[in-house]
Length: 556
Ligand code: SIN
Image (cartoon, rainbow, N blue to C red; front, side, top):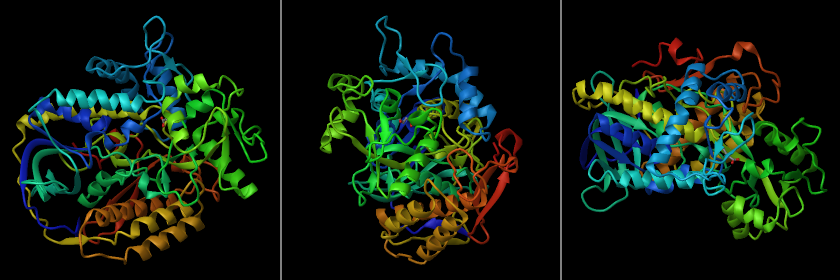
């Protein structure tokens, strides 16, 4: 029984060789690269610049510096990934990364420079070398997004863009291969409402799924649409339990929901301290690196201190007098964060910043091989939507923009090899279809129950309670399709898979922390992959090898 979002029948049609869904670093790079394989149509949920990329405050990591090497970058990435990276994918990331960054510079991206004109390379948590390139101090994502959109606009006529369009489901041909997508356009004129794009290949690059939780650094469009589309189409999705919670997200009150302002790890890198309301530096003694311990350790440290003190948040002290911080330093090094603090009535040079952990990055997603290919022929995924295996159980800081670039370009290469010899697939109606749609109000309840039971600290009991709550929410079906209902349905599906993976993985590893299983166990050196059983519509979860090269599931 194939699951599909309840939606009106397509009222319009469009055609392209490749349809790319998403317009962050991965989506635009994939669209530019896919031109070598024919016509390209890029679909984006809001405006081109509205995805997660432009919010990235950290930088882009690549072994560009004297004395650094891809091997050293690989080693740091593997350590962060806590034993469950795919080493083949990591090797590709670190060896192809430097050239991919140089191509980005050739496209027009401008990174911060040193006095001699070379790229200024900084260091972030987990990196043992200076290899992080930044732009505009703390506005790297914004600059990369600007440069890629400008490059896209220069391809006049080569890439068609449909904006304000939510992808609904995958179209498949009689052999089960991708044949396009259905989507809903909030537009005017010929392409308004639900339509179908017929294509030889589909690339999913819809970003993360931060909206599964109450508070996230992801923008409101990050409802994991691409991962949900892939699951409903029968593709494999893996590593969903590995959710990275950023420790220092500005706390805006207990009722704050959705995207919250990020206070980059780089602020702690410059010497800012975490304190409780009594001024105690509670990370000292919890880890040798104190505030600069790995992100998951700091996030847990904050959660534990909040529980010990009964306070709803901790504080970040980055005031004048703490390390290098001065008003001028704030303006030069962290202009974006300064602006966002001031907008919320906090002058970080004088005031403490209230912070608490919030969802930041999904290390898992649609399982791919090293060419971005999923378990469905001609369906590709890249960026945060994909699980290439480079992040393992914990993404190394500033590896995500790089992953988006490198693997999107590889998809272009694969498409160029295959599409010219591929007949245009004809979409067919699936025989036994189950239309799904949940009430829009389910979204807030999913977020609430996920935050309470499947957040930073998890246990069998909390996950069991969350799974029960998700089952109850599954009965709140709706008849009238519209944006919030589709998004709620997607989030519910992803939350169900995430909780199942987190409950099965009876160990603590990387960003997955089980209070009842505080140690890692070698029997969990596997990937947990989920897919929807076409017969029952239920989630099937199985252990798979870590290397995509070792598995049967991902097929060319
Ligand atoms: C940060 O700047 O703290 C976030 C960077 C990243 O997620 O890589």
